[in-house]
Image (cartoon, rainbow, N blue to C red):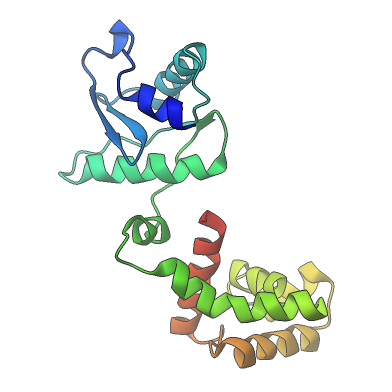
Amino acid sequence: ATGQRRALRTLPLPGAYDDAVTAVVDDRLVIAVPEGDGESFSQALSAYLHGAGFTAKVGFGGGYAQPSGLRWSYFEARESLTRGQAVNQPDRLSLTSLLMASEDVPLADLAAEALDPVVAFDDRHGAELMLTLEKYLAHNGSVAAVADVLQLHRNTVRYRLQQIVELTGYDPAITADRVHLYLALNVRGLR
């Protein structure tokens, strides 16, 4: 909430965080601490924030020795917040989340350009093309695996994939197009 964002800037942290470096970045409190148990620290911070009346989610990132490690850790923590729990475990940093972190990269627009025609077609016809595409990418392009998971004939899967090609201009059987569609699906999931 807006009032909480303003109060976040002046919130005193408990004495246990005296060695921490803090900043407010994009309306998020960022706390950099020496490497330790991120989950325990995050649980304690979450309890403190909730006790202070904040409806906050806490995400944390790993510790890295490289010069860019602080930045990596920040992006891991930021991406973990998409899960929406009180305390959110980080996943390994992904190319998709790094690309999305840059305001200069129009990934959301590219994702919409690639997938909106498929979503619109599904909405009109109930064709489940998006589900087919998701399963196809999740099963490394195996038509047989998709057919098995969706309980369809292989030719039905192939037909749906051809419809995706016609709607988007991207062929999930071609590596460059598959990467584009994969990123588009991930961007759609993160937004």
